[in-house]
Length: 163
Image 1 (cartoon, one colour):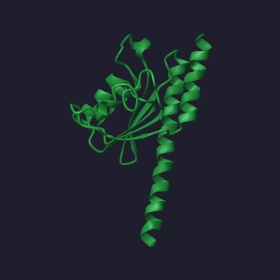
Image 2 (cartoon, one colour):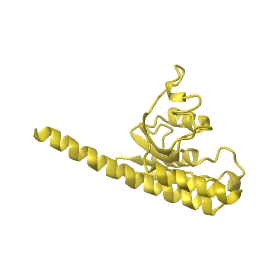
Image 3 (cartoon, one colour):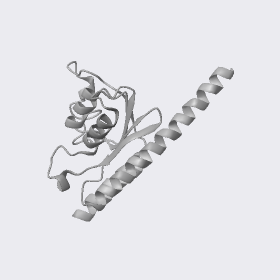
Image 4 (cartoon, one colour):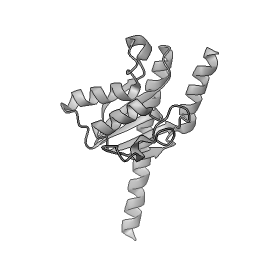
């Protein structure tokens, strides 16, 4: 029975860490909103250490690929000196779009944690469901709904203010 207790304790610790990393991603999303960008934030973690964090910068950089996930993946790859982020986890506030899901697959991200689902633009559990496609090179483990309410509220508030 000690084994089950140890496993339960480890699972609780993992959930707490996931919540903490998502809090960092939410802070990046809030910073993006303050810049007038769609509030999405991402954090890349390996062995409990944050390698990179980013928020959307498509307007600032005049770059349609400057999504939070892509920026964080680029920074993490530069930090470790490899295009493969084996053993790395990505925490992002919104379900990744097809472009970002492709980048996640090519980077070989181990686990994807995301907050709010995106019925219109998502590509993980909505839309094209890229990781379930037979042509997908690598599919990470996916965990959705982490701090979902906070992520969704941030997006709704941002777009409500724009109308």
